[in-house]
Image (tube, rainbow, N blue to C red; front, side, top):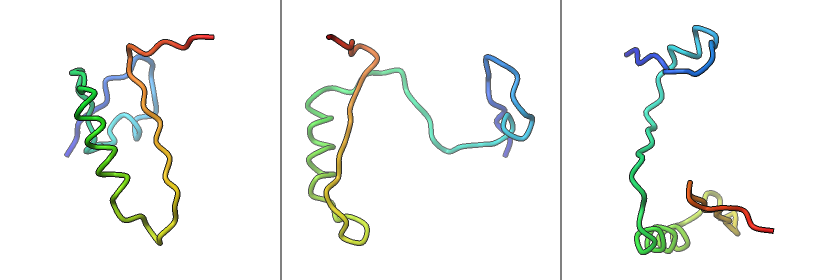
Length: 66
């Protein structure tokens, strides 16, 4: 299956033809749904019982303040 990448700058042909099953949607995810997802992740078993997990969440609308 070929789904050529829509790039802003020229890249190597092999990279441009690479297909990835991941996709991003422009629609925002509500805060309550994010809390639910992270609570489920917090209680999910970890690989090789290696804790702790850390998650970083950001959105396009987050602005760094100093």
